[in-house]
Length: 199
Image 1 (cartoon, helix red, strand yellow):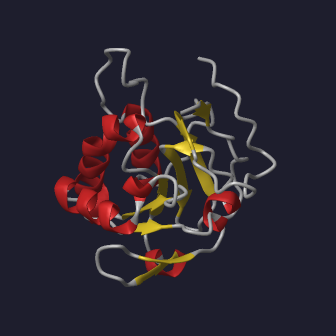
Image 2 (cartoon, one colour):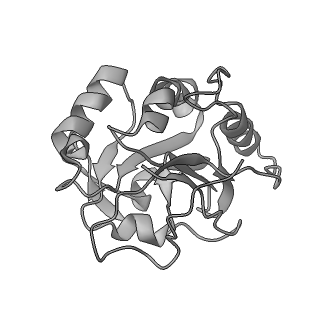
């Protein structure tokens, strides 16, 4: 595992299109699934990554707290499932059931969606406004698996609440830190450096 930070995609860019099946229902999930929502949270996650395990209950709670208030959410696992079978669809489905996720969870086997979003780590968060323009990318909060700080979701929650209230999101944002995405050999994007994140 390489401790990796978000690429911090420029604010204001449009959400890249995607179409992936939900591992629970089998239904196709795309941007159009979330048409009419006040905000959309796209999360790149993993079953085996300790950084995701550390926050997965909070992700479920965010879904419960804001899902009925206009927030659309989707979790996407981009890891190479041949080398990391714990991230295969059946294990994502088990995670969704265990945590009670009320949002779709998808597998990105070609890693094309992760590349389109310049996702670098798990977890990596991209929050878009009602027009699918990027309003927030960065950390959930200051908590990490070994720093003893509580998982509150503070940073991401503030951004979500700003969008749902019709306000602009504070552009001062800190990158997410997590496990590097497990790229299929030869499929690594140009932005992947393998350099450890500094905090």
